[in-house]
Amino acid sequence: MGNVVPQKSAAQLGREIAEGKTDPVELTEATLERMDNHEARDDIFTMVTHDRARAEAEAARIRQQDGALASPLDGVPISWKDLFDTKGLVTEAGSKLIAGRVPDDDCEVLKRSSKAGLICAAKTHMSELAFSGLGINPSTGTPPNIHGKELAPGGSSSGAGSCVAHGLTPIGVGSDTGGSVRIPSVWNDLVGLKTTAELIPNTGVVPLCSGFDTVGPLCTTVEDAWLSTCIFADRKPEMPEAKPLSECSFLVNETIMLDDLGTNQREGFELAVEALQSAGAKVTRAPIPECETIIPLGPIMFPYEAWAEWGELISANPELMFEGVRNRFMSGKDFTEAQYKEAWDEMLKLRETYAARVAEYDAVLAPTIAIAPPNVSELLADMKLFQETNMMALRNTRFFNMFGVCALTLPTSKPAAGLMIAGKAFGEEDLVSVGLSIEAIL
Image 1 (cartoon, rainbow, N blue to C red):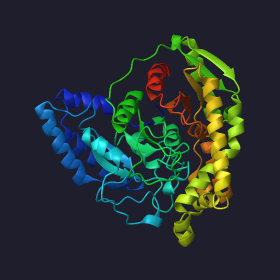
Image 2 (cartoon, one colour; image 1 turned 45 degrees about the vertical axis):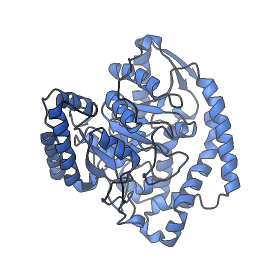
Image 3 (tube, rainbow, N blue to C red; image 1 turned 90 degrees about the vertical axis):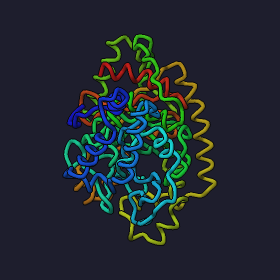
């Protein structure tokens, strides 16, 4: 797992709590102390939610003593990206445009998490309004990459990834519109699950692109990814059986996703594929033409939706926004509604042909990201380089947002290099079943 700080998984902690070996209050106090004393505290967290965490931990302790734990993760502290509304606590989505914004209620997914007994321990920094895959935010805070604080942490769920990689909580809750769970997961050697849109409600989540926004976990194990996703989706958190790799069939996409890969990213991917084949999996290499056809639609749909959501506020206060992110928002201002609808209709057709093409496979395999984490200072010094690097970071991940499917990323034997396993729409359970077997051999 690269340089990720060793820690127990959320599921391990949940089992210890259920067995009476770990006290939720003591666990939470230790978590808060680690956060408060961490050298990058203010770069990772917008706030540590001491009062809420302690109250929730006390309630978890009572359930533990009564033998009435609410879920397998009851009593486990986690962190939340700062676009998830938290009642009475500032939620600013990494932007001075909405500085001081305090919601009156928790978002729906946080309500579900709290009902299951998970402890809200902190809010984490993020790319401004979630519209960058690099995780660099000079306005509010850029979290450190686990491989070096001079490197981009990946975004937009940058603080979520940094928090878990530095051993501060076992799960960081993020969002993924075009890669924002998977990119920080890869660059910090973590597991990340991009869920199917609408599996988990976005009620009370600060929006970016309503047609693509999804909620998902960043963590260290597939088990944690699945159990937390079940809780967020309001379904019973039970692990599926791992599907034997000898019964699995995978498709490696030989179109653009394999182009211009960094050394670690190429080697990590190919070694992972070789390991799957050695374990008996059937791997087919073939082009997916829909990937080429869908590329021109992204620069229309994502910026159009983002500008429709935020353009008026940005236009009134452009100086409050970091130039690198503001430029991307502004790329959507000249598209018409007719162009957007035409692109959306074309995307829906391509989703159908893509789904038919990959129907016989358990998953599509690809390098999660084409490039290694870049140097933050170099990107801040050159906005053209910033834009180009951002789009390259997002290139492989956002295909699967446009295809409307779920995708899991796992760390490989090379640092900051991930294996992306893309499943079917609402096929998270099947994807996790395969992911468990893949995780065991990587």
